[in-house]
Image (tube, rainbow, N blue to C red; front, side, top):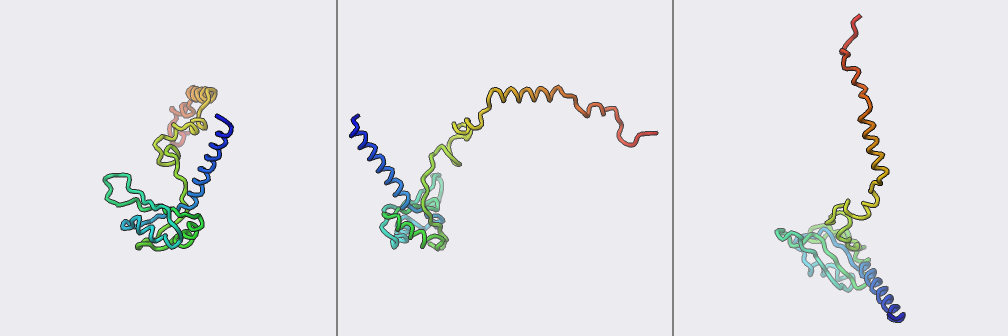
Length: 168
């Protein structure tokens, strides 16, 4: 691959990363939505603050759920300044009889990290590296257990004693 092509790819990758960062800055999390709220109503409520690019209200994960959505949504603005203004004006406001929380959206976590992941914590490489026991430590622990087993029980010599005052 030529240097010109490589530098062009690096430039495109950098631009894509910048787009992702700016897009994240202009996306809002809106929590505490009433079940009667839909994407159109949510878009209409945030329209006064600027041009809206996208509105999403996630559906329930369980197919048997009777709820129309999960109680939160995302509103993406064209400009990050518009999103900031919407946060300042809409956070802790009442919307369809409920107080809503409006904040900057956080990046979605990888499916194998944090709470709710599909992988047990002890199966992740980071946890294993942090909590792995060296062979030397394992031998020391076994020696300690063996030493405890060979110690005399301090209560063993008291078995012949009788409780209560000693007769004189």
